[in-house]
Image 1 (cartoon, helix red, strand yellow):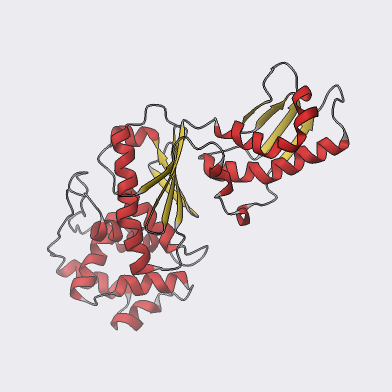
Image 2: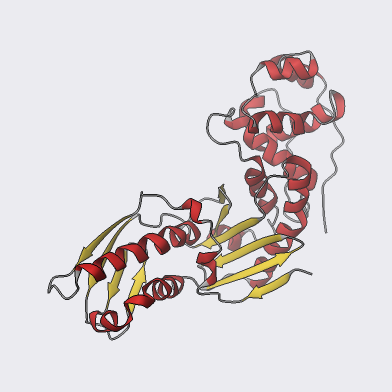
Length: 322
C-alpha cells in the first residue's frame, strides 16, 4: 500500500518542488494607485513572488500565466486573493503581516486547486493535483496505483537516475490527452472522463519522464515509438482500455510513431536483437544516437530492417489486463 501523507495539501506542495526549477521568465508588475506601501514592502512582495509563483506555475497545469499583476486593493477584507496571473493584496493586512507573505501567497494560490495529495511508497513520491471538481475518484485511484506499479519498474529497467518525485495534474483547461514535461504529467480532465479505463496513459507518459532525452537527442518518431513500446510491454491494463498495436499495412512507415513504430520495435526485440530498445534509449539519453546506431547494433540500416519487417511482419503479441 502507498502511504498517503496529506490530503488537500495547501502549503507543502510548493516546498517539495525543486527550487532549481526557478527562473527569470516570470514577471511581476506591482500596482499601488494610492501609494500605500513602502519600498521595503514592495521588495518583500517581489521576493515572496519569486519564491512562490514559479513553483505554483510548475505544479498548476496548462497555460499558467507568466506575466503577473499584483494590485494593492482594499476592496476585499481578505488578506489577499491570488490566481494565475493576478494577485490582490489588502494593504491593512500587509502592514502587520509582511513577514507572512510567502506562506500566505502559497496558501492562496493553492486554493485554485480542488485538491492536492502527496503520496509515497518505497522511495517514490507522487503529488496528485486535481483542478477538476468532477474527477471520478476511482479513475484518480487507478492513475495513482498505475504510477506506483509501473514507474519504479521503468526507472529500474531504463534509467536509474530518473527523478523519484513526480507530479500528476488533472487540468480542465488542457485539451489534448496527456503530456510529460520534466517531472510533471498533465492529464486532460475531459479525456479521462471520456476514457476512464485508459489508465496506461500513465505508462506512456512516465516513460517520457524516464527517457529524459533533452533537446536534439533524436527523432520524434523514435521517442514516441519507445514510449508506446514501453506501454505495450509494461502496461497494467491495455486490454481494459482496448489499446493494441495495429497490424502491419503497406502504407505504414517506421516514422509513423506511436503504436505503429512500437509494433515494429516489438518485432525487432523478438526477431532481430533482444534488448535493442533499451540500448537505443540509453544512446538517446546520452546524445550518442545516430542513424548508424542501427547498423552498429544489428548490421543493417533502419530502412533495411523495416523492409525485412514488411516482408514478414507476423508476431505474437500479448497484452496486459486486470
